[in-house]
Amino acid sequence: MNLRATFTSLSLLALAALVAAALAPAAAQRRPCGISPSDWCPAPPGDPCGRHRNVAACRADPACYGMRYEGESVVACQFDARGFASNCPTVGCTSTPPRPAGR
Image 1 (spheres, rainbow, N blue to C red):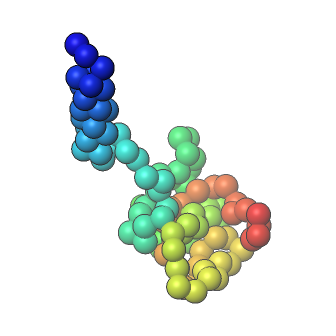
Image 2: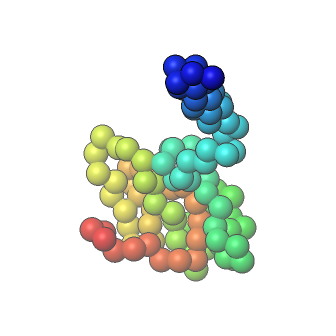
């Protein structure tokens, strides 16, 4: 093979690899949970608050905290001390307290 043929072959292989990566199943290209308003993120394994499947059940359990929405918002989310926002979605339930604002 001459140099031009070798370069062309390598270019086509690289292009095929890029196309295959772009078409990979969504499970292989996971996005972080909590950036879509419709997310309900799982609690860490063994977390007792993970049994709650919606905001109302999570909020009703005083030992649990809301997982904060991390997606884009036109206005800043206003969170209470337990991680529930008045103007943004809650995206999960956990027994881990939310981190302080600004950190």
